[in-house]
Length: 386
View 1: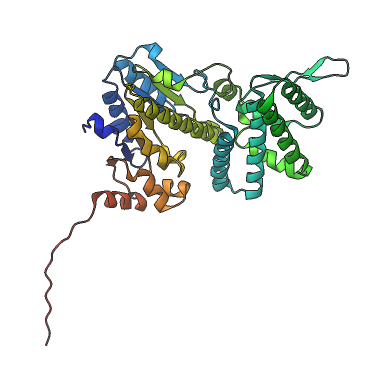
View 2 (view 1 turned 30 degrees about the horizontal axis):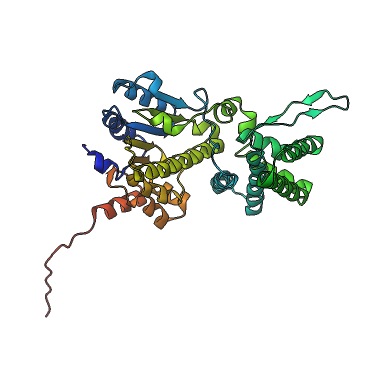
């Protein structure tokens, strides 16, 4: 299968059941073909073990130097994923992770909405604080009982939503002290964020708050309790996706979905948003006359992290000079997670090249039939009467 570069910007879909050969026969050869150009960058994620190792091997074989290859995730380089995202945006992706968990295990909409609002308020406090916030809990004699340095990351959001009693008072005092040192809108925004958080928590009965925090724990708490996730995604180290992809750079996001479940799904949702924003910046740069290096975005097991909102992102790809490649097992899976047939079909309808493996999945067969189109067929009929 050969695809020219312009066709690649139109997108590629690989669809087939487990073991059909999507990765071995399509994704890996395609990645090698794309990286034949030394200026071509590639961003990929994979929810399966060893996916990053395969891509690293391909990148090295195609002439990339080790310093051009960046694997990010637990056990690899850090990527503070919510940096640059507004509190509302972070809360919306947390809500989507709640929705996916609720669909799998059942969930109450009230608790999901309350948990989303609590995350939004906590994120706003950290966002408008502007820098790291020291909020150590002290003893009556001034000794540090509980050291606490909060930053704009998922670990600190979890820390705030769990804080009660003296811990909550200490955090509130640190926020007010920070606000007093700011001026104008910056001080107003931070004070409003704290007031909103305190109002929301005050109105929640203790039992209800426990259920709401329990909802948050399904997605956000692992970034507090897991050292691997905390180090990977709540670090104060910088990682710039755009810079890492320049001049043939390769970035692979590696988080085991089987191990980290809802937290991993949130990571992938946030990574998609970082990629969408990169697309917008690239479109802006091209309009200003800047030459863009070609970049590809490879999304394996896409149905695990897909949302209906991705439709607009895929439409940006050609203008941003980013070649999208998505692969998943069953089209029925995609339909179930994005809201039905129309939403799922719309997500992939624009993919110019479709590689479809044999399957018994009815939704996948319907997608293949739709891609092939219809033909008129003439036939003769005879009748006999007496």
